[in-house]
Image 1 (tube, rainbow, N blue to C red):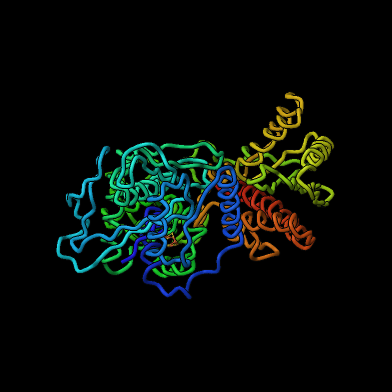
Image 2 (cartoon, rainbow, N blue to C red):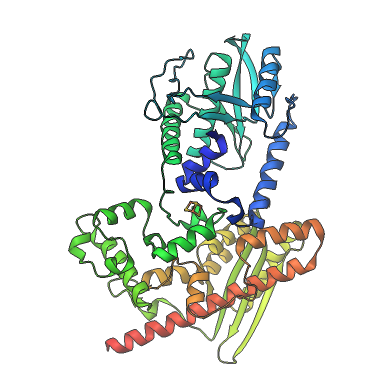
Length: 510
Ligand code: SF4
């Protein structure tokens, strides 16, 4: 069994993914999303920009021939080359699947951490490929020098999975040079170097590795658990989502996290029906009262396919959502990699005149951001009494960022922000919807609203804008404008529905 650092990283994020990567038919993978391709391009560019700052040598070997790569890397290390990129480190574990322990000074070939039960017939080979191996003074099997591994990542934080990979590289390097490096390095998005504490992360990596091997040797695949953040870019999403839907899996209920799911399983509540019919007293043995109410009500909304008023919420009630003769609906498209907010879209709704007009303030080139910010300010100043509806807090944060960047007077920004109304917060404080997520897309879909381009999304727009800048293809800009306008219109639809729903509920109460 071959376990690469990528497989271990994916296992750390989702054990099921590692299992499917090994055993599932690769033809049933989803096509890589454009946004993922962009992330890969950005990641490669980041890596290249860092490697360009230094002189490196690379071993030559046929692509994915790990053994040849490890041999060629070993030769360079024995020669004492200062910096090696694209090196390969390999370690074949013996048949009893033991991995040497971590010792901060020397490499211990003792077999004191069996990965699986002794006598297993499976041989395991571990492969890592650090972005850099850097020569330092010290004593190793090579002579008066040792190597330290470096991994270059695009992330902003030293995530646990990055540190697990760095620890694996350190372990395999220790096996190659006969001594542990004192640390392993991570270089992150801001180009700062981060030292991974091996005494902490090597034991954790070994535990993850042990669990990974056990998972890969077991059958069937680990249970599906749909988590929007984790699954949205995974190439098994269609496969897993279909299975979750067929099973009516509780991970499709908002509010059910992996740890809450475990608690619900202990209570033998494993379907939306059982949760919808559960007594609060049963759940309150594990959850607090508020969470108990939330989980049961969410299950009831889904099972009964109806929106349910949160009568217990202090913010419920129509008065919390303003209505005005003129209302503005605001949505932004951004390019995070360039720190750019390139489209400020505003739908102006004149309710009495029954007129609607969409204003897309678009920076066709990044340097135009200042100009579109001014155009946006001029438009909202034309309607000083109009509330500005948006969905989620991104718009507020962006207005603060742009105001600071372009020296907008503080008093104007304060007065502008006082008109902002976050429809997401209004929803969360008042109604439970029969949806899988409280994203604008899911809620508006439930209300029957459709985006004109079915495949469009915020992430897709990031790719489209990047491609527009590279190719000048205006059809991409047009698609972004349609998507942004539809987001504004979906927010309008949702706000209107919410006001009517709360009004009807208030009337029924009186
Ligand atoms: S879609 Fe989600 S549950 Fe399925 S393998 Fe990918 S990350 Fe894991």
